[in-house]
Image 1 (cartoon, rainbow, N blue to C red):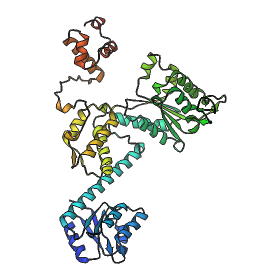
Image 2 (cartoon, rainbow, N blue to C red):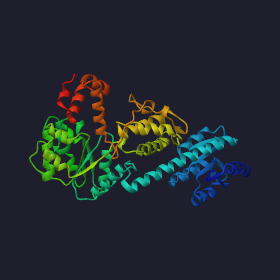
Image 3 (tube, rainbow, N blue to C red):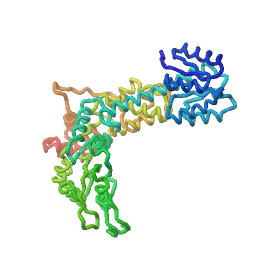
Length: 461
């Protein structure tokens, strides 16, 4: 049963009594006020969960009371009572923060529905606020959410590294796992938090632009360099520079970054003077830097300089029920944004979310939930409301039984088993095996080499 307190503000005692009696039958606590003076006193002292406010009062108007509450920064949810011919009042009330309005004479059943809807929205706001506060206590307000052991390890690493003297941090993980959020958390939990945090996506800029962006340039250094410009390392002095997708940088940029890391100096493009910088460099990549080194596309010495403090952000598929926690967090967020009243995910949707691989990770979860919340209505997000693009939805498929040994089974071992099974079924025919696995023949050959399969199988087609 509800236990919220509702304040009814109306100068007519009969209306206060009839509305109050109806709401008390629904389980609400009811307080009455006959004018704005009494109402304001109750709001300050009793802090009601909802106000049902008449526009016309003896010592002012409901709009004036809303304005006073707005000026004081008080955001108590309010339902406005207006005359049928005063829609302008309703519009003004909504602008001042009223959640809804009801025209007089009041229909009791309509009032019950509107009250329930407004209080549900208030509950969701409080839950989201509490959830955010709890997250901030542990790892800041950056939506780094998770109860899984993998994420608890990440939170511990962020906290320790942020408070350490390490000036270089390397973040690894698939796209969409939250590397930039982790970088910001490292910065905000450190003693550099009051200094700048500047971010650049290394894969989004061509080589000449990224050099200018990071190191700055002198006037006349190149065409269109009409004035001196400081780079990020200078502008972030005392703070942090976040280099996203560092694995995509060119050899020239890598050489200049190595000098910054080793000597803590930068030189602007076209300049001759060295500039001392004190910044924490946080680099991130969704690529394997070891693989890039093997391909001679990344410097070994730069890798070792970057890999001083390492945090790996696990993919969603390795985080268990964190997918449900994340989805419900985003659902609360979109409830407020879209003025919806979803209570959560249906059990079938939870099962689907647990089974789906989420290749886009946290970013994909947010997008899927946003779409469902925007296009649908009701109390729960059902599986038929969820759109996972052209990827397979596992609840509609037969799942082959997988044998787990006493020590479990890694995804890499499972991949190798699938590869061997496909080659066995096709008698070593690589083209047919690739079709069974829905990959290209080149990808199949790469995986065979990776798992060290016998060479005679390479020529089996």
